[in-house]
Image (tube, rainbow, N blue to C red; front, top):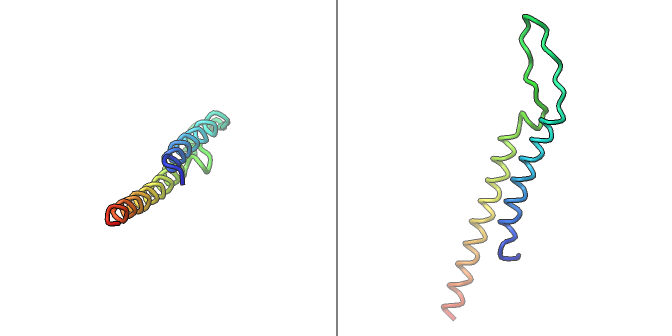
Length: 82
């Protein structure tokens, strides 16, 4: 794996999720609410779950980074021991 591959995936993924949310918001056409009635939230399924997607994606990336840095530390200690 390249040195910065995970970081590039992390940044690209976050930007992609934010752009997807923005484009969903921009393309959404909400119907006007009838007077005196409660309006349902005007959002897509993706928008309603946006923070869950962001949390899961970022948690997975942090997990991968922890594994990556542990692996790098083990390789460095093995090289110094040799």
